[in-house]
Length: 128
Image (cartoon, rainbow, N blue to C red; front, side, top):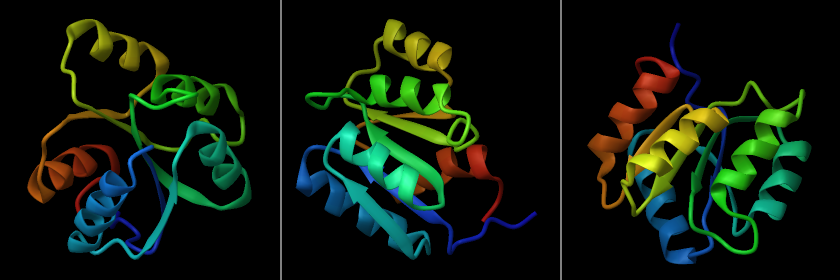
């Protein structure tokens, strides 16, 4: 099954520069409907009011971290099916384990490029 490149993708990061980088990388991969949020609370509002097909979230955010957002998404019957990719600058084993236990779909360590993003998203969504 082909990936619907018009799906709504939500990117969550408290650094506007990182949001712009992610938006540009996703556009290079031909995603067109990209929403963004600068914190977990805003992300939940976007998730509840849009038909989001993929979440890409930074781990280190205030006041709600990416792992807290992931846990809330997985606990919500209307949202728990959404693929969730976590981005972090830290590759600590305990973080990877915590993210897996919370139900993360995949994990990307910064810095990364469009090719790495595509590989990670392909493993979650299928070929595109």
